Length: 308
Image (tube, rainbow, N blue to C red; front, side):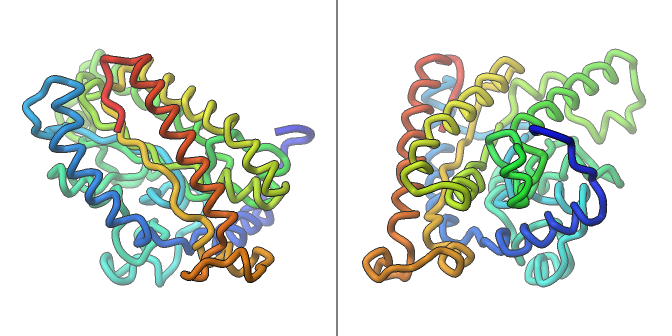
């Protein structure tokens, strides 16, 4: 961040709270069906084809990185509790999710026979035996700068989440070498689990939203290659840490998000039959196209890994 570092005062946290409150009313139902099908295909073919397995998905742990679409309590632990009606339908209480039910990452964990992931930042009575969730609502692929901070995004960007993961892994290795008690081990992944884990990444929507709030649509599209490059560097960083199986989400139709439809200047020719903004969805489509190309390149670069 350029210039003087802002104080994390109540006023600053209040600014984030206000900004995120409108932005993170986003629900995951618009892409849930797609990911359910895609995850089934991943189980049937991805792991078997790329890793030579039998086709069964027996990941001992899951590590997730992302924004509010997969945050299971990170922002709630770090800043303020996410209030009802979030969590009301499924959990019957605030659950740390920007959703009144479950998120896609919850369904993935359930499909693998694992408990829901605990947020890395939630240190109270937390069990990380089957993985950890580093996602935080409002996060971006890009590191936060003054422009993004003013809009109200989280300071816990993707590279910060990776640093948290690296620290987490290093600490696990240290504890096992020190011979910690079985009680502590029962709440932590084993060192060998990190290379056998499923790594899920769901982030990028806020980068596009930020671009649209601070530049023209043309400039927003021109910013996509730089964002994708930073994402690819994050995947490489995880690979260097031993990650071999990746589940990478694309971004949803941002032109259909309620806050975008309400806040963005609407012209009749820019609204499709569903009431969504065509130009914004075209930017999301371009992001996904470049993300797919990047994943293809990463597959070629890392033949020992599975990227879906």
